[in-house]
Length: 329
Image (tube, rainbow, N blue to C red; front, side):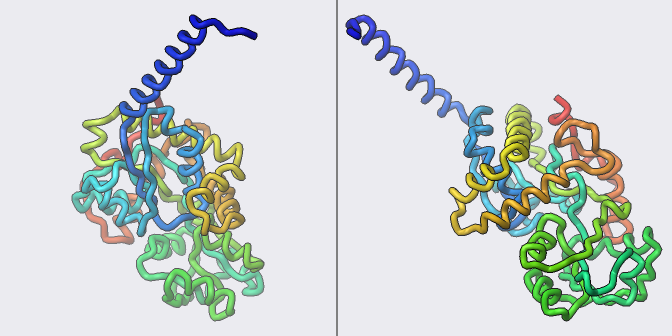
């Protein structure tokens, strides 16, 4: 087939125009960073997959993703402008905001609390009342430890009959595997998955299913970004919702996209953690709402518990810590 000169000129013009348009789009993209709550875990594959699949670039966002050193540090980094967006649990957002960090959660990722307690199956714990007399491995400073008094109260467990062993995060898993303790405070999407992969038969109790749901992982921004760049926040929320939907439909692709960025990671563990995380997207009170919606009751419960058990003193209302305006658009 012979192609005329005019056709070649038209094609070349179209090609140059396309390059120009692409360059203009790239120049128009907003550079933004997301600080994760901790080191790489399955829930984080949502963001790496969204980035690889173009969910963020299609919203005009050039996104950089960085691992974190705990939710508290992430809240501080976002508040001071070190990162545009952050991933942190609701309790850390409240704690930071009541201490002067000008941050707001704009989307729920894990609205169902990931807090749990896992016991070795051979420890003889069949119901929550059976924890009396057992030894539980905990780590000083972990948020779920501060909530144990509330858990014992609502479940009728005698707190005076509970024994705890304070060890570091990695040490908790070792202590359970070596049978030095009966159980441990464990993230449903983290230590529970790790122990399962190590072949441990477990009896797991979810805080949320026992009636103590607190707001889990959320996307937060500084108030400066919220006020100055609301369109950027809206686009980021849309892109993240798309990323969740993609990950839910293609968990293997989500893991593959993450492994391309973090080849040293354990693919099987990431997938298992991702699947566990996807089961925590909705809390009992947020079911039936738009993906990412945060239930006011979950925030109210979190604040009340922190006032009672974590020495948080504030007159701030729960609406000061979060907004659903971007997920309800």
